[in-house]
Image 1: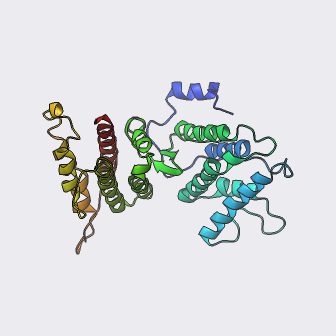
Image 2 (image 1 turned 60 degrees about the horizontal axis):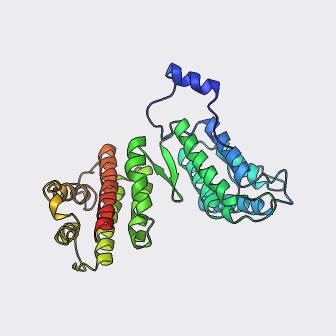
Image 3 (image 1 turned 120 degrees about the vertical axis):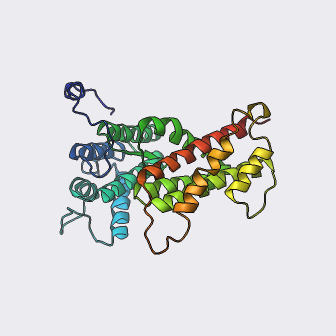
Length: 313
């Protein structure tokens, strides 16, 4: 349906009532209600068109039963104990009543994964423009997140945490777009896994996946260009291989003379010192702002390396 710039919204912005920092630990009730509206517009409202919306019924059933199985319960929070199950109502009640933010995000992520991967194939009555409606639903979800200053976005089938709108739009999204190429599948999976760990506050695991993604992107470039490297190559070895094979044009050498230093003193050591080894008798705490820095540095390196490879003859 789209988002309308209502009078009340404009007044809130004029008064400065809109927070200027992202929220991560709460999901406002209006946002939850808006997501239910998106479900009904995109998947369908089985209460009104049960006979015509058999696909919608199956989609809601799949979402609810999957969540129940993963949580080890028979019914979701708020579901009626007796009577026929209304899967849309059960899912909506869960979204509206669940207090644990991560479980709310579970329901949002999984339902929009269904929208992204299943509802595009709807071909029964009232499901014309199915793929276009799926795109519109995802676009509205991300816009609603932004509207409520919620620091998450649905991208490539995952809900990822964002810390800066500018960084996300100028660095993270371009990196994910570049990783869509089939030769970068491994790096894409690792980079998304890094974001998943970051969302859950798993700092050391985030650093580990960042390093894996960085190594995978360099190996993919080397394989694509048939550049030789040892089978047990470390990140530093792969960086050297990229330099030796002219990934950076000669006339840019001086301008990018600090690139190797940036990469070598950035992602790999951060992971090696804080995330990749035993912590001894004391617990090593990795600050969240450092994890965010390394995550964004990894995205920047991915964009730079892949774009540099594209520019080679």
